[in-house]
Amino acid sequence: MSQARSEPTSYRTALAVAGLMGALATGCQRQAEVTLYQPFAPHAQQQLQLIGDGAYIVSTGEQRACLLTFALPGALRGPRAFVIYVCGPDVDGPTKVDAQDPSATRGFLIQEVGALAGRTDFSEGAVVYRTRPLQPGWVEVELDVRCEDGTTIRGKALAENVPSEVRAFERQYAADVTSLIPAGPPAEGQTTHSRATAP
Image (tube, rainbow, N blue to C red):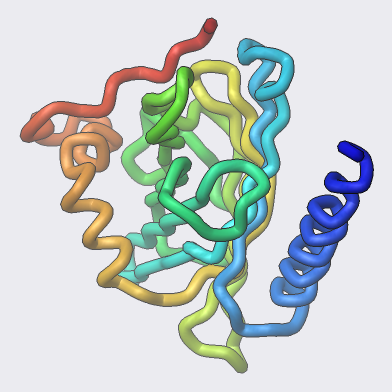
């Protein structure tokens, strides 16, 4: 009986992944898919695939910020559970992650629910941006970054230029966003606590 119930779920998951890849390749629909590799987590959480349609970007000509939001693993939509925030130079192509360089790309992962809830900052890696000249307002984003707690994030997104979504998150997590700036002004308010590195 359990096998029969699992087959429709697997089929729906396959359809969701296929639809995502098609959207990234040809369409203009916000989509994001990333895999979190977490060697310190309990076995069932060491590799999580996140798929969502919350992919937003804002560019000022000098700085670019990207926001990716996800529900729980296996769910395309639902209450927000994971957030990836990236900021850095407003350029196309590869950008290097360097938490100590104010001109480099910086960012963090926040898990909002669960035993491993908390924030971990990017420590190294790269984020690649590719604008679509024939599709203004859309940017392909590719991440391959490692975080301070040992988490590796790899994946792609097709982000839409929606400044209101990015700015709303930056207001909600103002202290966390401000703290990404090396030698920047003191963050007002309380930053998100660091993610647990062991259960």
